[in-house]
Image 1 (cartoon, rainbow, N blue to C red):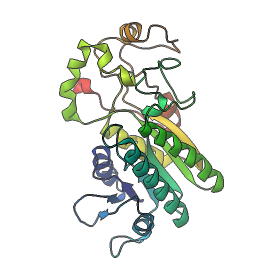
Image 2: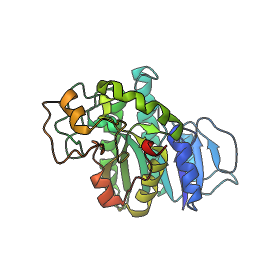
Image 3: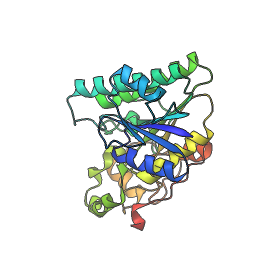
Length: 280
């Protein structure tokens, strides 16, 4: 496929673009910054005219795309003022989704976030491991936008029965060079309690996107995407007893298995994480 990837110069986007190309796809990167080249178009995603023009065709670069991977955003709360984060992220996502539907691009995969699960879990989760079954619990402006994006996608696929939109609720994205810091987390279980000690290797994030592009059908669906393990060497039973002693347990915790359940992604997408900080 020819695939447009927004946020193609970001931490996850760089790896996704590389891995999709390695899998044989043609990738058109769309971002507000980057080096001009055959596979990249500089575009302000908050400008709808630029977005629809960039997706529809740019000179001799391309004449349209088959699918869209939307990763561009202010990537976390606290980087910019709340109102700036809200305006940038919701506007960019609406522009990208709307332009795609207008152009007949009917396969969209985008980065939602683990934050809709209730991070930083100052209010404990309803149960552990967490999954996609309980209602969104946004606790920040950034997370509020991620929730609203999912609601927007639900309505867009209702209006367009052939449209496929999949929200991947990515955990904290890591690259191999980040793993050197992981052993220090063991000293204080509360350092990483904010996302139930989760993470996702960017290469496995790319795998999840590729699997979704291959198998997702019409309609909207959401999936938690995390590594198969936690960031901790300490066992899950010890961590949960210390930090979330009153939270009900739903199923086996395993020793170091992820507490951000990826069962649905495994079952429906064929997602199978390959990378762990323990192997670095």
